[in-house]
Structures are given as structure tokens and as C-alpha cells.
Length: 185
View 1 (spheres, helix red, strand yellow):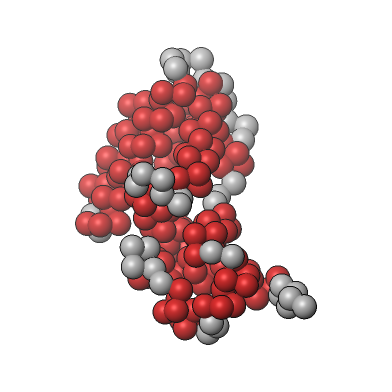
View 2 (tube, rainbow, N blue to C red; view 1 turned 60 degrees about the horizontal axis):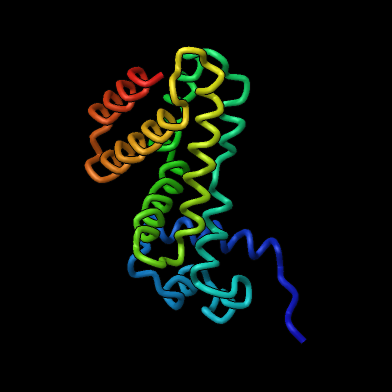
């Protein structure tokens, strides 16, 4: 008879996976060292999650912000610029936010590989961000082609965040983010 899942333990493992990947990277992820770091065994990780890829996808799902709430009620350009700037800063300066972003960027990179195991997750994540931002942009009369503008903003900010995480240059990347947002909203 299979052992029932301990949901508290499962949640603890998912949080630990995100921290581990942020600190050690996705490219060389192996279940044994991950399990050792988490104080469990690779067999138990498989018991809880099935595969290494599913473990990562579920861990990332716990980190996805409520994008709809970020842009809820925004109907003018100034408010949208302020919310988007605040969201950008919160996700690169805050320790937990930057950890999640660091892991997400690694998964998006891995999803570029043909038939990569994270392609579905990456497509869904991008669709949620672009769709939600496009809906907020659509409420602003002066924005032409909200979907294209949302794509430009999300992709541009993702690149700026990656630059900041790699170089550590907070001032330059903050200026670039503010300029990107101001020029497109």
C-alpha cells in the first residue's frame, strides 16, 4: 500500500527546491544532491512528484505571483506605470522575489531547447503575463495594440532583470526599466 502524501512536507519540499535551484542552478540539477540538501531521499522526491521535471514545475507554480491582482483596477497610464515599476522592483530587489525570478529565468532558458520538458510551463507563464498586462493596457485609450506592447514590456523587463541578476548593476538597470515602461505606456 502506497504511503499517503504529507501535504505539509510536500509544501516544505517545494519551497526548498526553489531555494536550491536559485543557489545551485538548474543546468546540473540532480535528484540525489537536491534530496540530500532537503533532508530526504531521491526516492521520496519521486514519491511526492513523479519526475524531476514535475517537481520543478510544481515548485515554480508555488512562486507564480497573482498577476491579475497586480494590475486589477488600473485604468490610467500613470497608475499602470507605477504598478509595473513597483512589480519590477519587488521582483528583483526582494530576496524571495529575486530567488523566484532567478529560477524562472533558468526554466525559460531551458524551455528554448527543442521538446524541452519545461516548454508547456514556460508558454503558460508567458501567456499569463502578456495576457494580463495586455488586458490592463487595453483599458488605457492611448495604447495601440495592447498585446504587442505587453509583449515588448514583458520581454524587455525580463532581459533587464536578467542583466541585473548577472551584473548586479542596480542603478543602470533601474533606469532602463523605468525608461522602457515610460516609453511604452
